[in-house]
Length: 186
Image 1 (cartoon, one colour):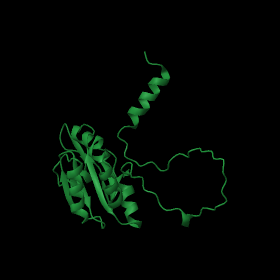
Image 2 (image 1 turned 30 degrees about the vertical axis):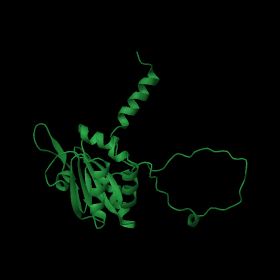
Image 3 (image 1 turned 45 degrees about the vertical axis):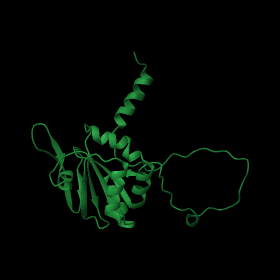
Image 4 (image 1 turned 180 degrees about the vertical axis):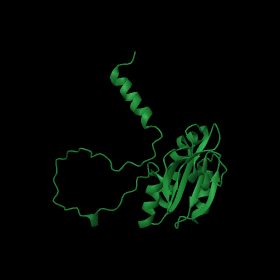
């Protein structure tokens, strides 16, 4: 029998799986040093840092908002919770250091659950979940981006003006994904 604390930890991990919202900020790390500096750090002396040890995934709305200030391509990973190949890409292709660095440099990376029931506002329209038959339903933005061809994993690339530039369909290893991404950027 599980102890209440163990059960709570397992439940917390299970409930956090699949969330696509980015973490707003990282918790502070306590450090101690024996030396003291008198250098003053201002906003001008701190360069923006990109963590290339992982892809900086965000939700669609956050990517669109970020693109208003700094233009980048937008890479949308359209997945489902039950898609085994989607999980394989998360565990292999998207963990490749070259893919992570290239993606973070050139793209806002979006995770979009095609079956999400959360509405997504975009360009004066609200994209909502729609039940298509007794067994399946999809968010209408995912349906629109994939031109109603609902296969997973699928990836959509928007250019810097948020116009659909193309799709990448199916599982891709790191080399194939890098080649596909470079085809959109170069």
